[in-house]
Image 1 (cartoon, rainbow, N blue to C red):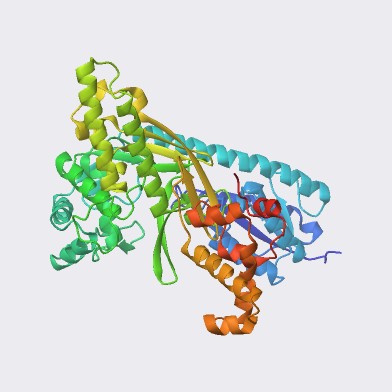
Image 2 (cartoon, one colour):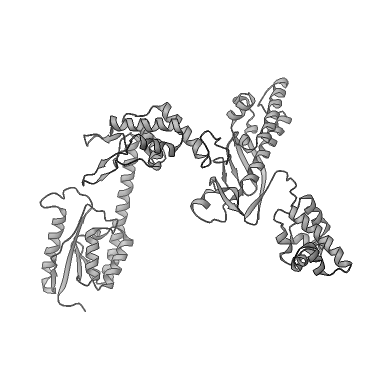
Length: 556
């Protein structure tokens, strides 16, 4: 039961700073109304605390408010029995945050009352009604946020500057009613120098050092509060952001799109295009490689293929047994952790496979004289000849040569599909892209991937033999040791002569009893892709040859 004396704290809040400098502002009006309500409850023992808890210019969408935090500390300390607000949305507009606040209030035996809404949290009906009202308050806040986002998007489409800290080279227009930027010549010259430095060095680290040596500094911005920011040495990240900001060629960016701005450009279009080309080339060059290294050297298929979910296959690498291993990995495995549906394809195998598929595809169309959409016999024969030559060049040049012809592609559980670049094929063959047969530019081939340990083994189109030297050697030793056992030689003597342990010899001897079909497949390199020596010796091998073939996945 509550004591006769109820200590009441008044909490007020205003979302914007507009009007707070007035002698009597919105916070004062809320406080006065709450104080009058507390006075009307004097007969109930209510007494207003002297401390004020005012949050001006802070949104109700967050609980990180100085006055609210002070109030909650006082509540937890038992110094407040009742929180009085003008409206419930002054306390919070979030239903989830409101639930947290009510839980803390109840834990401290503190109640909550709204002056203009006759509800308080001392009863279950009051809590229910407050939850309903807060649901509408949260809905209103979300609708307002959507309306603001739509307004910003519409304004940027018109090329208007929508605030925040301006980039180096620009300041907001002195007239606050004009949503545009004006170029600052001194800062604009710094921007031009950085673009020129990148054209010269083609390396962000080198540009960072050169900018520091030249005394170039980042933009110094002074906020309304008097706080200053910037005026420091450029970091590598700041330089990259500067070089990729389309605002310098007169564009306004909104998310992934850009729109013509009403401000003046600082950088010429030709310089911008050259820098973006160099940055793109550097992004695919392996770290530490000198400028000029072919972009598609370490990962020629980068950006070319997606998995069956549409996720981009991204180059990745790791060390296994001290040796570097390259992979193409579904991007979500890099950015979002584990996913059993994601691909982790060994780079060398998938590059070799795709190279072979493209070369075979071109050769097949050349053989069937299906390179051009329509042509007479001599022209078709000449086109087939140059396409045959391109097929051979791709096999000789490997994945780098194949990647240059790929516009886009997808790898799924059973198929590899790709769209070839007609312009690239035209440049390589001397033919006109408009004359090419559309079927030549569309590629579709069988694809199967099976897990083998932590990797994925690949089958695409016709499978090439892949002899496993370890399994072949183990099979040969198994027959040799079995013959010695049959002649009466003890197992330990065989192990000593071979320099092996008796346990190892005993594990390998049963391999001599494998079915002839399995043994022949191992010798030819046509064994199931997931069949390894470890799998062969992991558990007892059945005596029935048919059971063995079924167990290890061998198909006739």
